[in-house]
Image 1 (cartoon, each protein chain N blue to C red):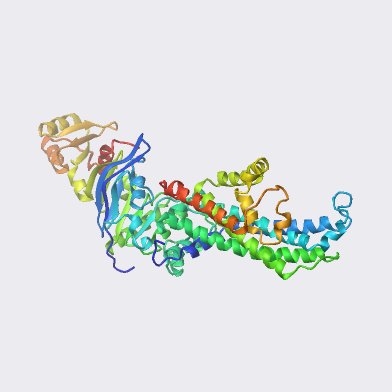
Image 2 (image 1 turned 120 degrees about the vertical axis):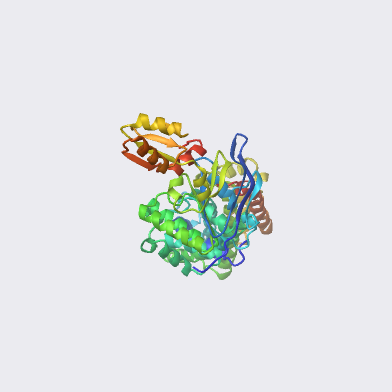
Length: 270
Length: 302
């Protein structure tokens, strides 16, 4: 970093924690994941889905370790919000023109990008852990009335590992997207449009292409055991191995970040 | 604050074009010395802000350089302790408190967090420290921007229109502060679109228009360069003006019935009136002479 005695990570951390939006996004991420997990349990509860599910033995689903694992793996849905957190971290600087004082403190601009990437990787890991704890508690409460399989330690650990990987990668990717598209609204709309519409459509039309796209890569990267059963719920595409998904997402973030460093980030601040 | 030796700021053939059409700054060279307050003057849109942003590494010059003791801003090892920049009052997150804004900067610069409270106190924002910046008035934002510039106790201050939005009390305070900083040895560069606003504050002036240098040097030199003019009012004006013109003065009737006399001193006019027996109702030096001269130099823009 350019400022010898500076604490760039601490500065970025303070930027994050002294505004409301990151807290709101993190809270939504946790609540959304917990809601998804509880919904999966409630829908699988004996009687609820009778007549709807293809599986006549639906009352046994809560007895399935895989099914509970998939419910627990809803922690991974928080990745979307980590992406938004990363985007907001970068674009917020341009939106409020705090980028001026940021670059005055750190005139070597790619250092700012790398610092934010590092912080949002750490925030992604922390958010994964907190979300997993909340989701676990919510599931245990939701499971109380029913007979169910046990939530095992290895299930829990593999979801922890998978979601940490996923949220770290999407946090970093979000920062790089924000750097490339400094307009906050444009960046968020682009990211959501991509995730909710474009990538699913492309993946459906060209499954072989789909596996190389970010969300599919995320699924691959998080697929450390438990999620495999359900990872292809929308698209029955081939998936990369875990390390392939990790490398691919890091590659996306590196390429977007490198392009941003040479284009948007090096622009005059006027 | 202790005695400091501020850096020398320099623009060296600085040129900045935005696209092909707009040349904001053209071949601009000037030097800003430590221990003095330098006014950077020009009408709005004359390229002042672009020049200051080049100085602070926010805008990349098309050609030429802007340097701090010979180095570009981005080459400084510890920029927040070298140069404090306050560019505009809008660079704040509205949801953050003033104190938290500064605590981001103390962390970034590796400064003790107590500096945040010290500078807030110093600029008179201690009461508002824990309020959201969204609730700040324009004047309070100016003070916060100044606090941000001061947080690293830099040897140089680069302030873009710092008096904007300040009340008269605030302007007087700012003037005293800038004079004191320069007296301690700091380098102080302050931009303004009105000479009158900084006339009592600055030692040196750098005047630009259309991105080009018009004049740079001590303010006193500028004042002595301009031909003094005298305002004269007399019921006997025609005869008096004839006498003055014969003595080599040039005279110009003003719309309010008074006359503007150039090329002679007030003493000479008084003498001519007494000798000729002309009654005088007013004899005074042109009050806003420097400002008029500034406007003439910058094409009377505004």
